[in-house]
Length: 307
View 1 (spheres, rainbow, N blue to C red):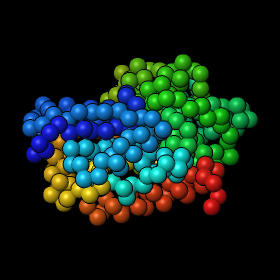
View 2: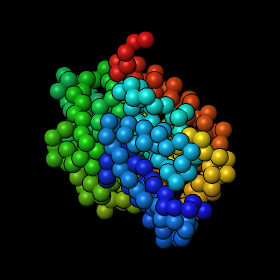
View 3: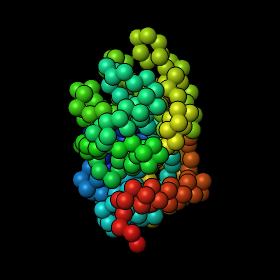
View 4: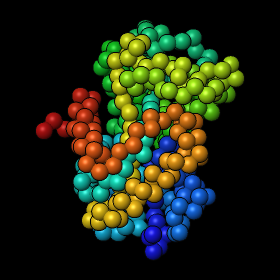
């Protein structure tokens, strides 16, 4: 066991998907006594998460520090040029993949992604999509939608996923691509409507979410509605560089125990996560492929200087 409390760095603000996951993990570890030492969640959102990544990069050889990642693992270094790459860290495990969903205000008439894209085309570029940050995953997806459909949107950056959902509830924007966990309470409350999920197939959760009995499994894949965009986001854990195999294995085992708890399973269900788990070389290979894909997506969106 670690001799001192473990710092769990979140390279994002409070209330977003990564923060909710880190705090859920912290609660599970404490409730089930999975570690003798406490785990302390610390948000370091500055510079699109760059502050958090540089902190862990500069903590080489410190096994008392871990970081939860989202796609800013790839997008922040590419977009900002901060001196950081995932290879500066030690990959531990993929905990899950987070889905993205195309959401509209429930008062609007659109029932399918096709309806929405047609309306966006009619609106001649005046439709607004709110998302977290700029040149990060929500904007990458927005650019991919434009490319796939020819519809044009105005992208409105917000500080976090919670704020994004509120913009849509208030009808200040026409759509969002919020993660399920960021918008589910508004869907349950009848304020928002999910049109499609940016995955290859619908999410396999059949619990009722809405009063009229809709489930995540009822939300079709965007591809099936003619919107040919697919995007899933890493929820993974890394340690600083220079970690020993034993130290890495300690955390892999810890997260395996976390994944077995009823609280984690509830969290996965309520947030409609894709529950893929990876560690070791399989995880490293996946990360390397994702880095390349993000570079291609960001180049296509015009977010990178042409080298």
